[in-house]
Image (cartoon, rainbow, N blue to C red; front, side, top):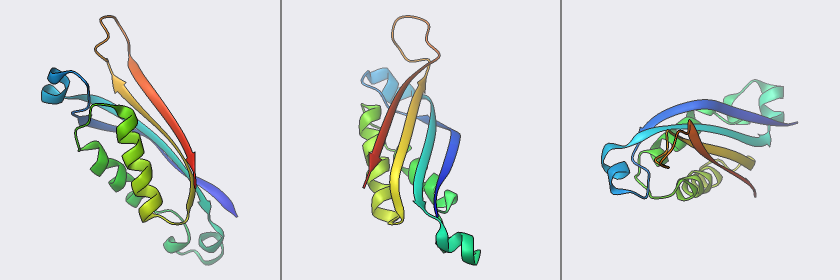
Length: 119
């Protein structure tokens, strides 16, 4: 049985951005992530090791969001690589990272990048 585990609306204050002031004062970011995996064992035996533990998924996202980077694409790649490395049952990932009120010289609620990758 294939399925999806998703965490939506994760919020972080982080220090990502090209401009020096973004790396000093930081900004607020929202992360949405969905991973696909085989849930057969979890569905049949009611055991956590038969699925994707969303607490582990959150910790991976949190750890990578805490590392300052210039580009959200770079952060996304680090998150995806770590998930594929640490969670071998995951076969596909869709990840969106949004920067709230990006410094673009005009009014904008958020700037978002979305990455999809399969093994």
